Amino acid sequence: MRASLLQIDVNEGESVESRRSRVAALVREQAGADLVVLPELWTTGAFAYEGFGSEAEPLEGPTYEVMAKAASDAGVWLHAGSIPERAPADSGSATGDGPLYNTSLVFSPSGELAAAYRKIHRFGFDKGEAVLMAAGEDLVTVRLPGTTLGVATCYDLRFPELFRGLVDAGAETLVVPAGWPERRRAHWTLLAQARAVENQAFVLACGTAGTHAGVPQAGHSIVVDPWGEVLAQAGAGEQVLTVEFDPGKVALTRDQFPALKDRMLGLAAPRR
Ligand SMILES: NC(=O)CCC(=O)C(=O)O
Image (cartoon, rainbow, N blue to C red):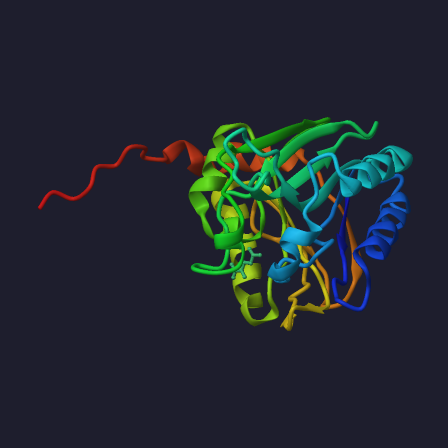
């Protein structure tokens, strides 16, 4: 399987419209790949909180349209990263606005929407995404020829139970679009490897380059195999990281070193 991770430079010097068409052209250039992956919130920037409301789109908005077409033009499975999604308002909404979600879109090679994942763990503690966006509730997997993707977004990488849920749902390739900051780059690499080793799965983690909202981005998108080996890692700048991997290595690793079968589920709390 050939995957291309597009580590996009996200900075305020480029308009959202121009970045959208530039990224669509880059996706088209990946014809021949099986899977193309984009980062988290690459239209606005994951830390550009102030633009979330004004740049929000309905699920089937401009990014959806442009990316569906790019996937079908290239004939690739496309994890199009995430968008700030404005969900439809329910009938009780006072403002007429529905909630905002950080929503990832996955398209098939014919440009059909195969899955949408609303980020479950929102980053920012008492500000930013954590207060501006609503939390998703559903785990999402996507069946591709040869492997099943489990999707998660950025800060989700810190929550191993989410990935265990994806593995229990059949995931073998864990795809993590992100907008991870440079100041915590060591965590990014370490957590990507940890999620691969503990779940005996491939991890494809695609971050952004550049600086937006004053936050330098880590770049260093990474592909890790089920044994924890780093197959490829990007540098700091905009880059297409292409890697070939054998999805059969997941079953082989789980068979030869069957640690997942030794899980002790439902451990009780210590007695006092
Ligand atoms: N966009 C994010 O989720 C940022 C996550 C982050 O900075 C971290 O976990 O550290």
